[in-house]
Length: 386
Image 1 (cartoon, one colour):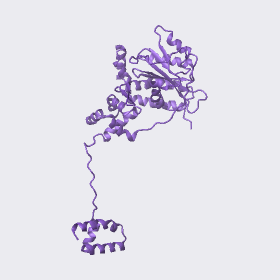
Image 2 (cartoon, rainbow, N blue to C red):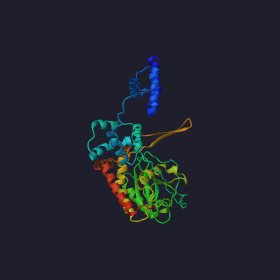
Image 3 (tube, rainbow, N blue to C red):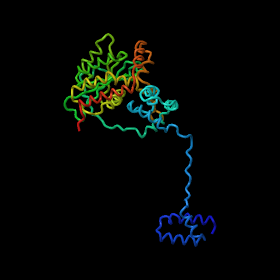
């Protein structure tokens, strides 16, 4: 029997010998010794010490991973969580802005780690954050009651706005009604500037025309630019004589337009902000206590507007075309609303300098902590019902 045949025979009987009983092992050992001509002690050593052949694992091709490092993942995940779960492209734009504040809050990072975080790609961010991603589900109720009285007098927006200039605003209301539309509850009036992405939110009790108009006037004061155009859905809180007179009875009238009925895509900018700026903050709970309104407005007019407008970048659609039956969209680089305002030639230097000075006094991690504390007060006034 050749040495190769003996090795093959050993390979065949070794698993059987290992799992056999004492009597079965004696039979297998006798057969092995008689077949191969081995001494009994030598045969026992072979069967006990034999290591079965396994194909070696192929070496991983390419460079060794440099980002699979807790020192990289920890600051990346903390910034991602604090910034309200931005997509990887927006998070990449956030990192250069937020890293100096992260170092102030959590201590120095090695230069090598900072360099990796600034160099990281969106696809790598997606891979590293995959275990930490949280899925958000849930739909709200539609609370837009059609206002037919002024439909013929307020034109439908047909892309006639110059959306490269700040001042053209989309507005919508978000209902904090929980699972029932019965009774009175709080609403958030949401505002979004199309050119810069600058947003404002205000809370109102119900959808009364007077209350909504008061908050619109307050937003006009807070905006760093004048309102040139105002577009809303067909709800009665917007399509009324109070708001129409407010925009038209002035030296420089504001272009007041509305969307088509049952076409949410006409207000795509603000519909997206309803989720990122209101629902992600307050969820779908019911706020049916009037005392929650000043608490919400205290949050909206201070920390919340500063947090989003100064530290959270957004992307803008700059081109959309049909290629081989597929719609291909092209977006610009993620920028914060503050950065878009600073780059706009339509904003005065005085306003830009004031915003820059205000930015130097802020810290996104401190703002986030204050936001969390104020949210606890809001939810304590209107606790969630089972």
